[in-house]
Image (cartoon, rainbow over all chains, first blue to last red; front, side):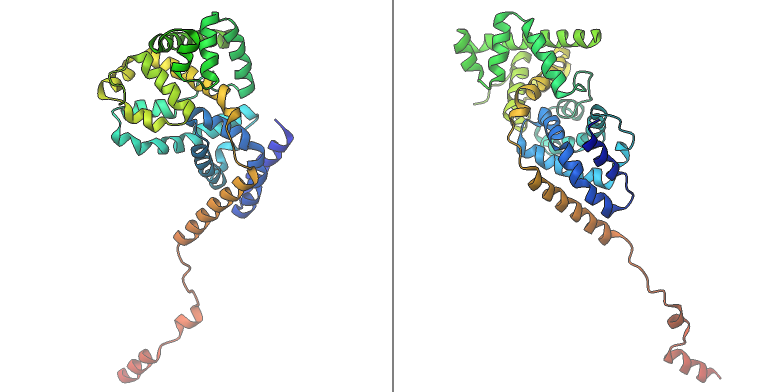
Length: 190
Length: 117
């Protein structure tokens, strides 16, 4: 673990609330980037990410018990997601559930799921594995995913690939399932 | 007009789009009862959501416009201060335990005692 992060975590172990409050600043500085990227995966919205993260840090200050035995960055992210972030992610969408036909369980699985092996990988590792897997796809499949990741709409992708929007959606769906299988196989091999 | 009775592949792509554009509430609200049932019973959908989140994270998390950490720390400090204040307000008030004052008989008690005697 990075020295700065290790020292920041030591400060959080202090039983005195005021001391812990002072220790929050180095902790936030060391972890803000990691945590906001993790939250962005589930929310896709910077403003909501900040709101949730503010409460997550306040929770950590109040009860840092779950971070006591953290050994590395991956462990830290896993514990923070499971014990602090997930609760707030659920709260974000609880209000909406009144107007939704999804069951409470499905909604929770959609917005604040359990961590899979893939999701426990670091951002850099994920990027590396994904690039490798994209290289193994057919040219048309890869192009559709790359254009989607550039932020293009399905209609624009359909124009680019000279096909219909429906065909693009089907192509993306099949490619995503193919990627899922490839990524799972890759994780098992590793 | 929102599209109704979408197939599972359309639902997944709409979910992915909502995640990418940061408008999940719109997607959740757009679901009809039939579509929600389709999602609940489709194993393929749940498998694909995992990869969709990863694509979202790898493709867009680094490009997200995040605020200055210094400014954010002041927000965290304010949240902590608010919780401290709440904790202090809800903690039980200390009672006045001045025993020397409590043991002294009051004027009224003294007059009652004199009447009795």
